[in-house]
Image (cartoon, rainbow, N blue to C red; front, side):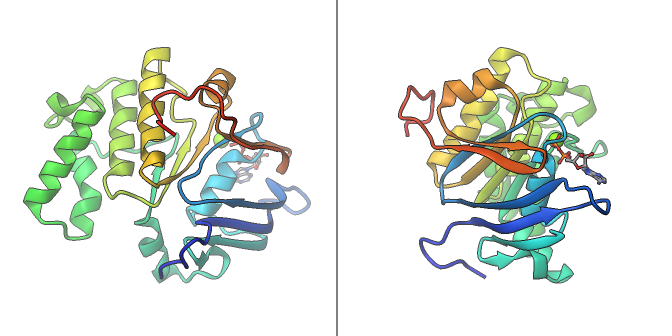
Length: 239
Ligand SMILES: Nc1ncnc2c1ncn2[C@@H]1O[C@H](COP(=O)(O)OP(=O)(O)O)[C@@H](O)[C@H]1O
Ligand SMILES: [Mg+2]
């Protein structure tokens, strides 16, 4: 189950994904993302960003090629092995799907309950996380009573609660104002300094410039550019 030390948590070899014959959402993508690395995934709408994240999360399978996530070959993973892999991967997808018949706290705690974390420990952890996203005072509210930005922060807290080895975020700041965008991005960046491998899909170029991280640009399902992190000014990451 565990990957060998030093082995990159995400490796793709000639991966293609086709939803319709002759049309590729991803086309011959090979890449490697190292442990603790923070990568921006960019490219215009339809470039294949969401598809790439879905493949890493084993929500889709590649049509061709191999994907190895945390040492597991996603193309060959049996259905029963998928939940165990997903417990090690936090996701903030665009339709973040919080459960409305549960409180904010319960939404974040769910992933801990699933793995049998003792209740006291779970509540403490959830409280700390909600505090870090500035929503501890909302913990007993239903998600629908929160603004879009607040719900997005709950979704991030939920994704981080299990201390995932990989964090995938699909346009996580799409609906947020500039201040909240930086708050969310700093939280995501600080997860990467704790060793979490982070991939953020965005087409916000000011964000990409601000953080100076590695940028993978997709174009028509292919990797058009892979720009390494710059040693420029980074905000809130300490890296
Ligand atoms: N479930 C699907 N069924 C059919 N086509 C899809 C599906 N998901 C994505 N696509 C197509 O794959 C391409 C890449 O889409 P996507 O990965 O969503 O790109 P991005 O996130 O960069 O906008 C697009 O042409 C899109 O229409
Ligand atoms: Mg998308």
